[in-house]
Length: 130
Image (cartoon, rainbow, N blue to C red):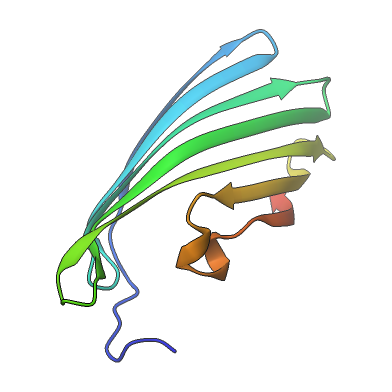
């Protein structure tokens, strides 16, 4: 059940930096939203990631991050408090060609009590670039 008048559109900006050392790519990213959905309004996410090319087609990668949402939770007394949690993922990617790849990835958080979406998931995806 979703609250009445829930806002689901928002603006977000991000900055990503990465550096490649041979077959290894290290990166960091930060995402900021001054107008996050729901009652939160402000949210930010920071992440560190690594990818290792095993050959021209196969790579493995992992990332860990922290999501912080300002005043996103309301307790029994009506007081609002922040919702902060950690995220991580690890996966393997196969590049079919220069424009199409397959990815199998495990995702998880430390916020399992917040609902099913925050539980562990394994996701297969296809990426196509043009």
